[in-house]
Amino acid sequence: MRLMDKISLSCKKATSLIEKKNLFPLTGKEKMQLWMHNSMCGACRAYQKQSKTLDKMVSLWYSTRSKDKNNDQLSDQVKEALLNKIEDK
Image (spheres, rainbow, N blue to C red):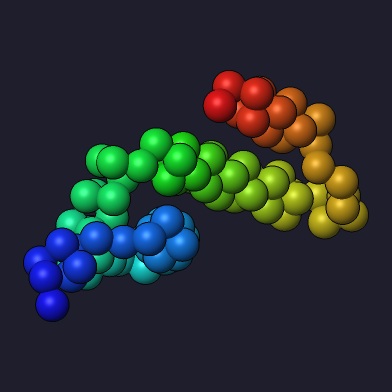
C-alpha cells in the first residue's frame, strides 16, 4: 500500500472525523489525515467551520432552554445568532 493511500481521506471520511473530533479526541493518525485533507479541500474546511458553529448554537440553545423548561421554541437571540452565522459563511 502506498503512503498516500494510508494518509489520504475521502470527503466522506473527513466529515466523519470532523464530527468525531467534536465528541472524542482523535488519534495522531486521524489528526494528520484530517489536517492533510483539509489543507487541500476547501469544502471540508467550510464544513468543519459550520459544524463547529452549529455545535455552539445547539449548546447555547440547550443552556437557554434549561433555564425555562416550558420553552420549546428557540429564543429570538439564538435564532438571530444562528441566522447571522449561517449568512456569514
